[in-house]
Image (cartoon, rainbow over all chains, first blue to last red; front, side, top):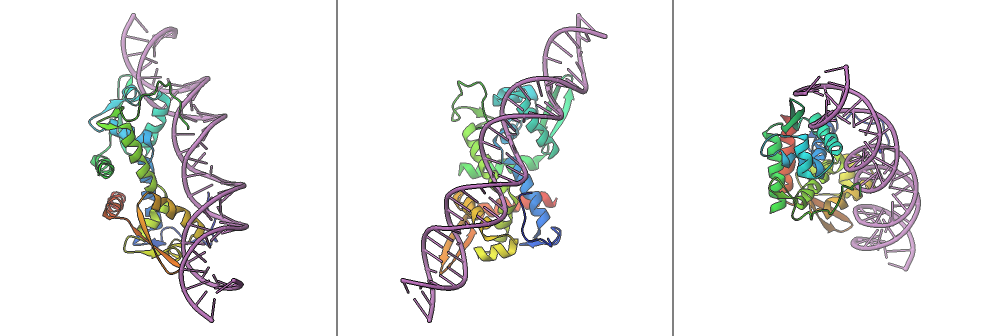
Amino acid sequence: MPYKHDDIEECHDCHLIGDVTENELIDLAELFKIFGDSTRIKILFDLFHGEKNVSQICEDLEMNQSAISHQLKILRTSKLVGARRDGKSIYYSLADDHVRMIIEMGKEHIEE
Amino acid sequence: MPYKHDDIEECHDCHLIGDVTENELIDLAELFKIFGDSTRIKILFDLFHGEKNVSQICEDLEMNQSAISHQLKILRTSKLVGARRDGKSIYYSLADDHVRMIIEMGKEHIEE
DNA sequence: TCAACATATGATAATATATTCATATGAACG
DNA sequence: CGTTCATATGAATATATTATCATATGTTGA
């Protein structure tokens, strides 16, 4: 914990910043952090128009399978993508339109 | 560089993922990365309703001045906040409504 | 059941990141 | 000018993160 700060630490549920609790802000940062890695963003973009299996993603991103799987796990855990098995392959897809929206918005921002 | 990957490396300007260049995606990840730290998110929220100087931010976040200044520098460099001097104090504020929008959107996401 | 393929996972090493401490810069005012 | 207050910055340390390698798991079909 790269923290310290003279504690008697107030609880994060109670400490407000603006009108939001500290905990909510921590969750929010956690969410953005997921989008804040180029491999994960690439995966999400790759899934933008439909599901793909792991091998396809590896080819699209030109990265090795293990790296992709590790990042997919993070995306899965964060509920940003869903997975379904079909035979030997596992197909990943964007979890919901929220994800799509966030991506779209970021895209607009950098394109301006 | 935690990279490797059997190069002859295509240029990042040319390699498309979905319909976006690799470089654009790297920039996009870079943007989200800024929002992906709880201290920075807290600062941004703290500035949501108007400018504040560094001391005020330190008090609001209950963090030491150096840590805040370091993060403010990152936010400044990324053009997410602006700064103006008034006497001894320096007042920071959100750079534009884009920032406000991104924050607002994230807020909605976690509140759902 | 075994081989081959697709994906996941654990450990490790390289790198990046954030906070702290100490100190520097810069403004204001006697 | 020298002191004080406000902020910035550099170095060091602790921690987190990512890609890689090796290997495990799970599925299919002969």
